[in-house]
Length: 135
Length: 139
Image 1 (spheres, each protein chain N blue to C red):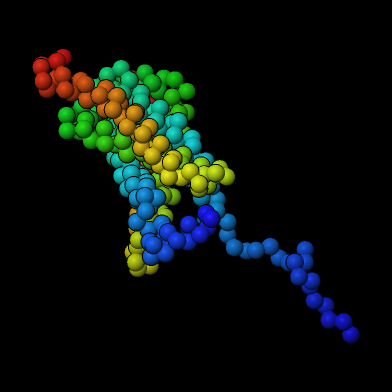
Image 2 (image 1 turned 90 degrees about the vertical axis):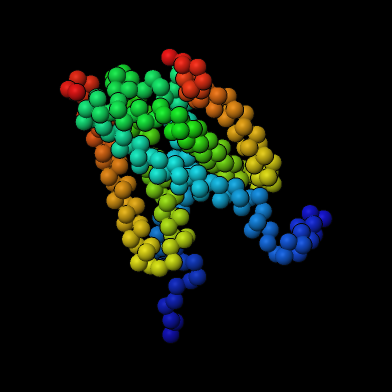
């Protein structure tokens, strides 16, 4: 009597249940990094070097920039990508250096809370900015 | 030939081809500049959020960035971000370009050369107004 056994590498084998998260995070660092090179270096050039740099920045300057959807979208993309890119970088650093599981867990909780806070606050400010707000 | 040279240098360095080598320091610098930039970003989103509170409070806070000492720190920030960006390109070339690993050391020197070529004029324009004000009244 033949025993029913799957052939090796049979197509009926269940796909691996291991998560691809770390691979996707690795790929995200490269794709977001490429976008951030343009977004962040452009931002730093405009804000710190061009035309007097930081000395010309004030409320009116910000209001002028955010009157354009182009710069709103630029800043919004930069905020999200930089937080996710930097957050994932810090997650890696915490995983590497934290010695106790509890330390690792709580440092990452602090990191995740700060990421949610900064992304939410920044997004809220860009979407609800009012150039005619009173002093 | 090449493999025996690699094997010989591996023996000479006590089996540590990576540790202590230039590639390790580029990685250390990548981590430090990345973490520093992330902490700055936290503060920077908070200070920018003040535009939602009041124009006066925002302008008073932003005046901090125009202080000579903070001005120097901004040059440090731009230098850190620029290194992270250039070395990031190098990391991507090592990962995705077939000849990347072979040229990783040359690319590190290129990274540092571009960094200096951008930072010298960049720092000049960033400090110009502060230097004028400090040295001779200015505006």
